Amino acid sequence: MALKTLSAFLLAAAAAVRAQNLTQLTFAGVNIAGFDFGCGTDGTCDITQVDPPLLQLGGSDGLGEMQHFVKDDGYNVFRLPVGWQYLTYNQSTSVLNETQFANYNMLVSACLSTGAHCEIDIHNYARYDGEIIGQGGPTNEVFAALWYNIASYWKDEPNVIFGVMNEPHDLPSIPMWAETVQYAVTAIREAGATTQIILLPGDNYTSAETFVSGGSAEALNMVVNPDGTKTNLIMDVHKYLDYDNSGTHAACVTNNIADAWYPLSTWLRENGRQALNTETGGGDVVSCVGYISQQIGYQAANADVILGYLGWAAGSFATNYILSQTPYYNNSVWTDQLLVALAMSPNTNMLVVGSVNMTEAAWAFD
Ligand SMILES: *[C@@H]1O[C@H](CO)[C@@H](O)[C@H](O)[C@H]1NC(C)=O
Ligand SMILES: *[C@@H]1O[C@H](CO)[C@@H](O)[C@H](O)[C@H]1NC(C)=O
Ligand SMILES: *[C@@H]1O[C@H](CO)[C@@H](O)[C@H](O)[C@H]1NC(C)=O
Ligand SMILES: *[C@@H]1O[C@H](CO)[C@@H](O)[C@H](O)[C@H]1NC(C)=O
Ligand SMILES: *[C@@H]1O[C@H](CO)[C@@H](O)[C@H](O)[C@H]1NC(C)=O
Ligand SMILES: *[C@@H]1O[C@H](CO)[C@@H](O)[C@H](O)[C@H]1NC(C)=O
Image (cartoon, protein in one colour):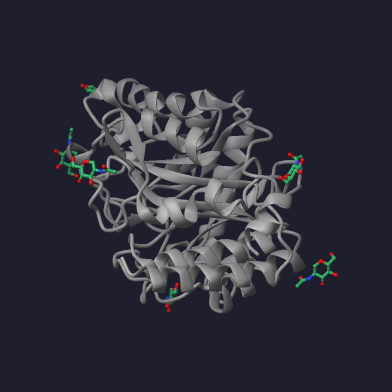
């Protein structure tokens, strides 16, 4: 590793943070993937490829990872992707298969046992087997009933977050999609989950960059709780730092501030809304350490409207996956990947509630 370059990046990041008002983000966490493996962007999910991040199901030690992330890093939220097909055992219905749902709930329960918030994320790209929900595919009623059934199970658990849908894209009609999201919100609230956070996803893979300019912000701003309020309806946004925002290249080329976080924060503040960045990340390389630090610093300076960030991804990903945030476990010791250790861990950046206090953070950046 080029230490000289690394320290230059860290100094730049620290300067960016110092120039802004240091505040603390509400949430920071990691995606614990595996129940979504086999899902494609066309909304197909080959459930034979699922690799549950649970020792008791023969998979990786997701519980151990989450305990490590909470205890050693100060993280306080995890996102738990799962395919619709997995939960219904390949049926495009709202009927949860008891065994499959119980398996997934083992992960949700493991997550909750750490004291963190836990996001249920339906990882279907607004689709089921290539067909768009409410626009030719499963009806809004079926999708709403799916969420009703899931939310009924967790209605009394305040730390569960409902992620309506992972990365919608290429939607023929964004207003019609907002209507679909409204169906899900109404169903979740009517199931008795009246206060928990619900995440509202926009078009273009929930790109933070085009959330406002692409029309998702305006459409989703119409979605309301049954009582007409917008309490705890939080915008869901993703952003990667590679050249095409795909999250498939190790090198980072941007901190996303000018193109994404600035316009997004401005819109959120003007409209009295908030967002959570549920996927971001990069390779374990110096460029990502620098740019992610700048991105998180900017998010923290706008913590009134940006609630936090979650890295992609740990769980069942191998430690050598290009965006792996899966910690190494050797001789009973967990060791974080470079990007987590040097930039994303709250105990490193000190920009998340519950991590080192702000007085300390202020002088740490001097
Ligand atoms: C920092 O906060 C103070 C007080 O809220 C405000 O006057 C100032 O403009 C802020 N500075 C920046 C760079 O946002
Ligand atoms: C589920 O459907 C897929 C095709 O979409 C198929 O490949 C797979 O074998 C099915 N699995 C089960 C358990 O039915
Ligand atoms: C539920 O899923 C299990 C596999 O986990 C399967 O064996 C069973 O047949 C499914 N039940 C129904 C009613 O489809
Ligand atoms: C989607 O967002 C990316 C950046 O996140 C942008 O480059 C691209 O042009 C957007 N596509 C559409 C169709 O808006
Ligand atoms: C842990 O062991 C793996 C091989 O099993 C090795 O690649 C890795 O560098 C080790 N990590 C640490 C932090 O020792
Ligand atoms: C925060 O850190 C400073 C410097 O170490 C310390 O003096 C102060 O007591 C701490 N405050 C809290 C609330 O822990």
